[in-house]
Image (cartoon, rainbow, N blue to C red; front, side, top):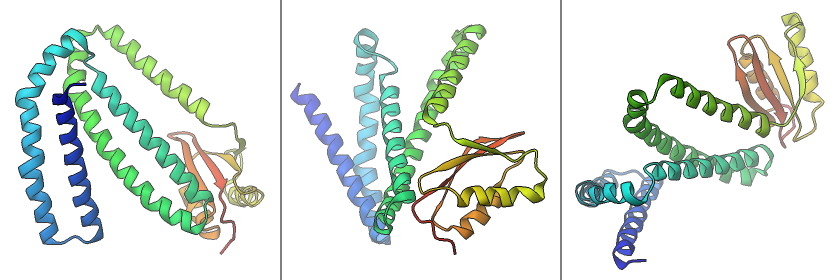
Length: 246
């Protein structure tokens, strides 16, 4: 590994460490002085670094990638980070549902930060795709091939949903009169053991039911939309660790 690329990596780590320090300080106490220090760092260090790469490093990299690399490699790195944050969020969510109060408090803080970081990465990632890749996709790929790619992508998503979601006992309340539905659903939820769930199937968004269950079993309800209309709503309704009713 060359000492030049080591120097670039070291500068990246230095910039990331400094930015993280400023952000953590702002989380502790947001003052005008701290905000000004962050702004000065961004203008004097981070922005010149980005502009220097645009002007001098990337033109060289265009040639090297054309000869030796993959134009989509950086996008795949984005996907690795997206998967990493999704895994973290899933673990924090499980702790919020099943952990002790102390574990839940810690998980809540980390889940929020991971969600915010994932949001920023996804915004940047989709902007790159839409500004760089999709115009080439539209201009140079036959329509039939475009459709094939889209169908294959949707097939991957459908397969992921089917393999990631365990088969749940289904409660389809659509045939029942509205007056009978809530009592049956409450009875079904009451019978659940902590960690268990069932699949609620309805003909409209059961959001009012969510608020009622969450009020009666505060901290115990685990509510995940699987399908959201327009004709059918499917919701995984589960019971977490805190099962005491108000």
